[in-house]
Every structure is written in C-alpha cells, then in structure tokens.
Image (cartoon, rainbow, N blue to C red; front, side, top):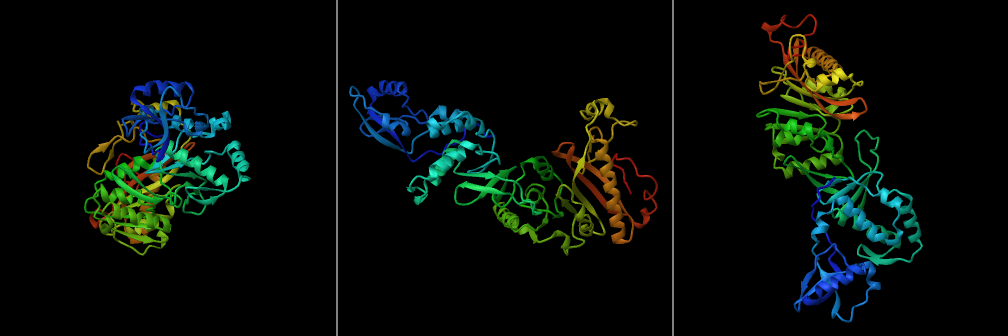
Length: 467
C-alpha cells in the first residue's frame, strides 16, 4: 500500500470561478451548498487581485453565476492540490475520483472492485490481476463502443470506448500519484517466469525501483520484481565479500548480483541469466549503479557455463529448487580453497505442534540436550539458529550438505568437507512450504586432514563439519 501523503499529478487546467477577494468566502459557501465546489484543489490568486475557486468539471452545465457576486468562469493553469486531497489515504482517494468520474453509473459492485493495494515502481502503478474486472466495467465499455469516434489527447479519432478507457486509467494514475498504469496477469509457464502484464496507460513499461539504496531498472511487461525477497537481499548486502569473486547462477534482473557488488564489496561477479529481457535490465542497472566494470553477464543456460575454478562464493537463487545447478556450482568453486554456496530451495513444512512453535519463539524448549544449538556466522560470531530451525529444515540442510560433499569429492577425486553456516527462512511460499537458503561452506580436505572428520555418522548441525 502507498503512503498517505504522495505527490498527486494533476490536470494542466481546471475550471474555476474568479471573484473579488471580498466575495470569495460567500461564493465558496454557495458552491458548497450547490455541490459544485471542487475540494481537490486550493483557491488560486489570478490577475486583478481576484481569487479563483475551483468548480467541478462534470457539473459545469449546472453552474449559474450568482448575480450578486460578480465572477468570471476561467481555467486555472497547473492547479495546486488541497491539503485534504493530499492527506486522504490513496485507496480512499482512488474511490472518490472514480465515483466522481462515473457519476450516476457508480454502484456497489464497482465500489467493491476498486483495489486496496498495488505495487509502485517509480511513476508506474502495477495493479493486481483481479483489479477492474467487475462486469459493470465491461458493460460500460460495450455501451460506449457504439458511440461515434472522437478525438482525444492520445490521438485523433480514437474510438469512444478507448477514450473512456483512457479517462479511467488517467483518473487512476492521478489519484495514486502516478503517470503510468499497468495490470498484472498470470506468470507465463515458459521457464523464465515471464509476467503477463498489460500496460493500460503510458508508452512503455521501463521503470526504476530503488531498494536498499540500489537502483533496479526493468520493464514490468517483460520482467518480474520480487518484493518478497527483501530480507534475503538485505542479508546478502551484509555478507563479508570483500575481494571475493562471486558467481550468481540465476541472476535475473540483479536481485542478488547488485547487493553483492554495491554493498557486500565483491571484487567481481559473474552473472548468469538466460532471459534476454532480464539481461538487458541487468545491464542497465549495472550502469545505473556504477558497477558495470566489476560484472560480466553470461547469457544463456547456466548449465552450459564454461567457467571453472573461479569462485569464492556461488549464489543459487532459484526456486522451487536449484538442484540442477549444484554440479555447476561445484565446478565453479576454487578447487584449492573452496568457498561458500548459497542454496535456495522450497522445503515442505508440516504444521508444527504448539510446543515446537513456542520453541521457535525462543523459549527454553528450543535448546538441545547439551544447551542452545550454535551456528558459526561468516563474521566469526555465533547465532542461535537451532532455536528456530524446524526439524524438516535441519534434515534438508544436512542432506544437501552430504549431497554437495559427494559431488565435490567425485569432481576432484579427493575428499571435501562441508559445514552448515546458516539456514535462512526467506518467506512462506505456499501453505506449509517455506523458501529457505542454506549457506554451506565447502573446503577441500588437505592431505594432513584426511582421515579426520571424514567418516562415521554425520555431526550435529551445531556448526560442525558434516564431512
């Protein structure tokens, strides 16, 4: 939802009655009585020492100039929104403006259909898929299709229903402080999560979104922006990556590539992406943030990536599973020193009993028999993650660590050790399904270390090696 006090784009000219200042208050009271006063705008001084009082455009035919108060009908250039208009909640402002636009055509069904939430990207508002889908909207358009063409600001001789539609979306944009309007559809099943977005007002879908001081440029009709990953983007921005080479296997528009570069201090990032629209967006964002010289974009399928032995860190930000990228990630890690994998995955989590839920909130029941489980963090400190790790999450992390260790040993023909550094719950993806990220440290076992910690039952997840 939007803030309640946002800039409001206004029409260039609105009708008003100009009168001498001594008559202004009486004229305003008269206009309010007749419901002709347009409270969206402030009275404005005009030449001759007069004051212009805004009146409703749609009620000009009802306007009768009062003879006892000399006044003139004119239009105010660039009217200033009133304080009341600025302070109305955006959803209320939207309903008021639509009701004013449709007049007698307004009904309860339309009232219920007006959206209460939306996404904002710069000067573009992105409506939800079910916005403005009520039958009266469709009937309104069909009724107007039979009207003769007329001109509009968007081009000569547009059909009347197009003009009416344009007026609707212009009203929506004005009420929500935007200049462009789009509506989401279903995500296309093309393997790239391409959005089905219809641009309702505006000439193009390119927007700029600022998130944690990072500027993301993308076309909303071609690429998705995932606000639900904000906690993980913030976490990535705080990782100690100074001097490191990072590979982002599923870069998209740069959700994690840019935090690695802008905030985490990575020396260089290899960004892999097969969606050409996302590649273009990422290129623009790299330039916007001044980090283009520290990133190479690899277009195409990351499974065919020819890089090897280059990475201190690999990000596998693909859900529901990044498992197809695990062999690639193992090849990318530096063979002599290893590194860290950030493995994203959707994990099924059955409803937890109340006792477990209390434990997850940090109650004493959360501690293991030997005390509170501790997990090493990359900054050398420790974080009590065991207190909120559900058993299903722990089992998934342990199984993933074992699988990665086997892939690395097979690839390099020598033992490796893996260590669970952190398990991050990013968000609830679906009922009883959570989007998790496993931070897994992977290191080759040096000759003197072989035979130590490489056999027997897996160690517990208290930060110990699982190799």
